[in-house]
Length: 279
Image (cartoon, rainbow, N blue to C red; front, side, top):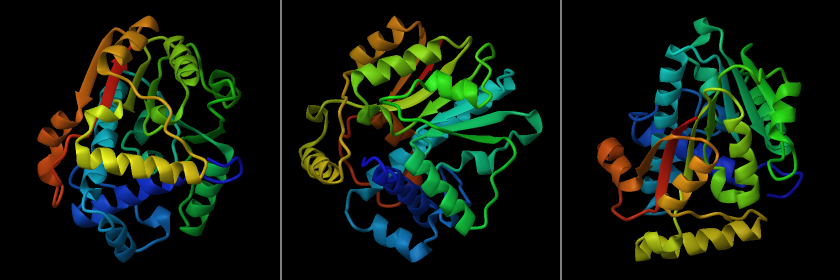
């Protein structure tokens, strides 16, 4: 992404979430703020969803990974975790929908300063107030020390934390991924849900061509998809950082678990995974 511009991928993900509300009635992830925060209407969401016949795959994956993360987060809160960190939050609305308000949790949204400023503007224009439990933390994941930034914002390093890290890993270098996992593993009883992509060979021919076009589009706007992993390799990286309980959910499992909830789901092998790991 360009230094002073918000993430275009964050906008794309937000539009997929909005399309899921309109086309699928939020059946995987109900989000009454998805369209409000975009300052668009249902026609815009439908137009975006219909631009490509395989858009349903992205819509399914975007909704499913958030649902997997939020279900795991709820279980962590039941066990007593009170710190939630959303890395690369974009236009995520979990803090607005927070079902755990009575539990006195604190939610830290960490993102690039330009993306965060854009989100503040969207919320202000939509007349949506920032909830008291939400703390916004500006971070450049390639350059900044995430831990330092979080602590400066009030994060307690000696208390357990749940991290969500969705739609970020493919855009980071292996070094930045390793540093971030290293920080998470320094927090006692930490958990993380993140997604990653396999090398393009794991995709069907049709999806491989789409991915090539998408990569070219990203390069035009100075965003890039850098890191791809085989599932054995991501497991090895996690274990090297002390994460021992690892659930790796591939796209086929996601499609069988949630696919019936998405209208017009296109078939196709997409090499995308969601991982839930515990330290």
